[in-house]
Image (cartoon, rainbow, N blue to C red; front, side):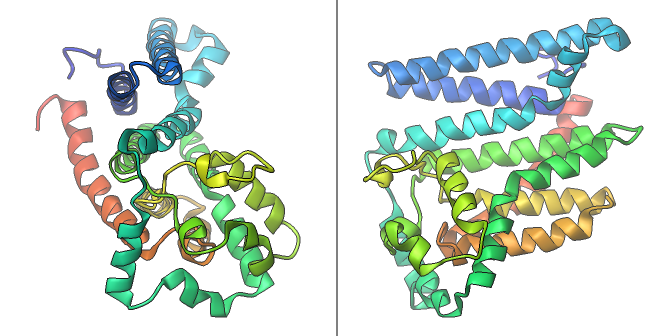
Length: 308
């Protein structure tokens, strides 16, 4: 890989460019007559060009680099994972022509003898809902808080290593979405439009719920949200990447590690309670977490050293 990328590209740079190329190939292969897919590929090409140019600029100019370019070079991964997510989770249904929720429901019932999101409803309470909705909506804030602390350290080695594990984990989850599109129990087991009535919060819940819906591709006020929602239930990326963030926080001995552990644990519980995921999604997210750490360490070492 070092023959393609110069050594001043980080591992996260390399895996991001390669995944953007892979995603663009998929989009062009399955959307030859779809202008939106072609537009996605063009956007990905522009992003690759921005990554390459910013990396080279900072490498050449070093401390004399343009501050805006330096900021982009160090932090472009945060918006990138959202951009790639919106593509991977929105094109997968049209590629397959179906959702796999019935398979996931059957697995949950085979393992637990019931539908866990239906069973857990007996414990619903506005205070519990408020806390868990806040935890679920705080997902990306965990990564911002984690990497701001790592970035402020004099040695950025842990920042770059952590950034690689996170983006690599995100891309693995996106591969899961592409292979196994599903929308989650709030559509297939529950009445989506009854969520506010059945799971009311106290104050912030309806606003945060709208933000989550919007981020998941659902425009406000539509009568057929299942036609718009991203297919991102399997695996539970919220579970997988929250656990990755916890792992990084504790191995790097960050100041926020216990805060992140507490909030992250609540977030994982919320995926079931708030009807975003089946339990098998969460179990798959845990398995993806283990694979992310196991394989990520090895890939990172190969990229850094140039040999296994």
